[in-house]
Image (cartoon, rainbow, N blue to C red):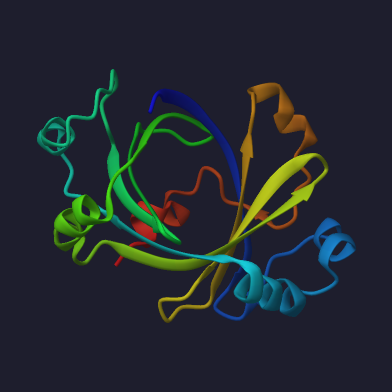
Length: 178
């Protein structure tokens, strides 16, 4: 339950029937179909929603953040529930995450109406980094990969496996939510 710097690269793998993968992707997975099947079979179901913007939400949740929250997210990942506040940013931003009870989550969930995402997530360690693959399961053809980095220097270790959309606002989950 502390603030941390989130350093993350994001790659677009597939969208609306178009593939954006690189040779490194094929060397690791062979095909998008195989990755898709593995993610659906072995991944974890995630539902997340975004609370209305404003510091009053952060204050009402008693989230002790020292930064201006650009987004506040509710997430259910399997049987675990979280509230996360994130600052504005692309490659780097401040994040505060805390686990909440199922009842706290369910009480806040209606406030996210119209700003929700459903996806399956599967993690794979490649090149000594964890690549998180997300298949959006809310009636869209979208597959992305996020790579969380321990520090800014490790960005050099990231092997691009798709189109780099790290700085593209369109692919931030808060903007994908509906």
